[in-house]
Length: 420
Ligand code: 7TS
Image (cartoon, rainbow, N blue to C red; front, side, top):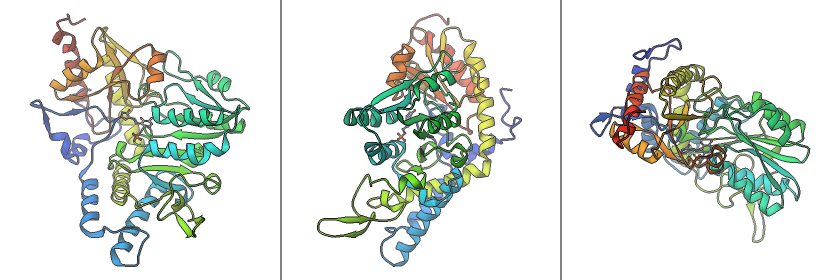
């Protein structure tokens, strides 16, 4: 299996890798093994070229003026919006709002929806494994409005049981916000069931798709989430472009988050009326080249197929889990099998600080993340300060996992310990 890049899923990974120039660079004399895809992903040539083409031929300030480049940039921007709509199965492109990233999308929901919808004594429910981006906005709303922030806890396998979410989401719950895939544990949570239950209790459901949208087919209509958010840079696109999907019935009633140019209809000395959706939420000059990069990234992902990507990553993760579990001085957090888990493995090496693990692996050209992964409440829940994390994408190979495991076997030796 270790040399098999063309497995049951039929992904020709060697061919795919040729599309990603950065994967050929050397780090400390070794070919880069990039296992930090949970933080950000690399770009294929088609995305790099789409941005180049935009800047060489199409750049202008969209939605302003009638001149040629004003029109071409508007077309490029709106074409990207339509690609996003189709990619996540939204009904209308006016339900797709471009933001900077997942963090901004969640803050937009908190300020524009949460501040109005939540009152004293109401409850907001999130998971203990949330990224800080899906915690801090709700802490703010809870403090300002006198609401209660409640947590759904993960069990020893990194899962949230039906019993757990049903005991936390109650008639008092106004907002449920949960990541579809945990950026630390890799758990794929039963978000469709959680959204359904939240609706039964009269709550609004928000799904953070930062770690799911790049890796699996998303259909927001089927999921029925009221809001769905993600970042372009974790799915082959540029940094600085993110998405907020919201059901029209909510977006229409929400007040703008940011105010200024391009989001108005009329402005008088003392008052203003706002532009229609989605422009009401896109104040100021937008990141058009970012949107273009996201459109090109979507084309690339579609050309491979999200179902194939998910299946390949599951096989790769199963292989890595099997190998890493055989090292008795390594502790793995979250689900121990790849079924129901994204390509994310968080772990600690006995007696070695995660930063040392990452630094030693870097000597072998291997990039893994270390730290609290912006999930400090989860770290506390797990009883640890930090962990190392390997996170995969469809351009990673079995060979790279072998290299990673071999390097991991040497980590304790570097620090003067025996191998086990
Ligand atoms: N939500 C989840 C589940 C995430 O994993 C991240 C980023 C965010 C929100 C925030 O995304 P941003 O694009 O707004 O920054 N996660 C990580 C990570 O795991 N390592 O670096 C960033």
